[in-house]
Figure: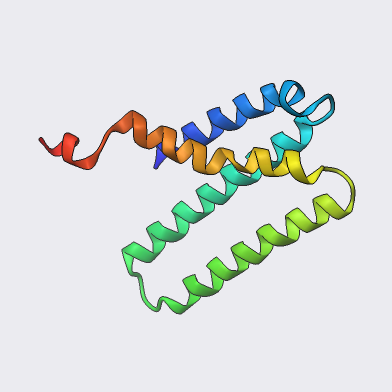
Length: 117
């Protein structure tokens, strides 16, 4: 999971640095906000999965926590966009660091079958 977090952070940084070229001047803060949200979202998801797999007690609280995380993410995005602090397209480009970083981490580590053999 650490590899995926680092990969998302690096992809987010690369997207932020290339934002002025890709989308125009002034878009880097919005891309940085999106990639930061992606990184925090992956970290929170990894903590939730770890806690769920450890199986300590009832699982209902983790369902509630994951729902709160989801709606919290939506609320943060809505507040950032409605307040005018970020633009939607650059924010989504920054959030694309999440799937791109996960794919990059998987390409770096190789397939599970290759690691076993």
